[in-house]
Image (cartoon, rainbow, N blue to C red):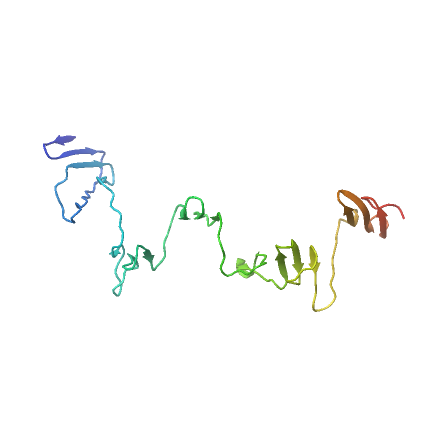
Length: 214
């Protein structure tokens, strides 16, 4: 059904309850509507222009003790949320190139960023309860020299293992039927291989890339 007059054009489509929303004109007063278009449930009216809220104090939530839990601050253009915010889709923060995204599954994607609570050389791991943690005195990465320190924050080699409380141990464990070995190379050529021969449980030092026969 459509009714046309000189000043108003209205159309109604669909069945069910419909709502009428009339946007104010720029001076904040209501005026006659030139066009009204209602489709389905709920009905909506597309505004003729978009108004940007800048430098205005505005409450968009229930006012509590003189302050709204969701409002625009009078000291700037910030939207302050004093309670929880629920996003059932994806939330994007930042610009086009540098952004952080949080999706509905709880995954966080960050293009770049800085964790203010971390220190130089931190190797992150999941601590108690999955908390993001660091322990530089026991696990440290020297990025300038490409060195990893275990038990020390001052590694002196590519891999530096230190135990300040007693003896230090490096464990190599293989399957019962395979050899546990360490290979030494110069460039791409293996010069020495030493380790345990699983066939007779003997320690062997040999040239090349495999354990030889003693």
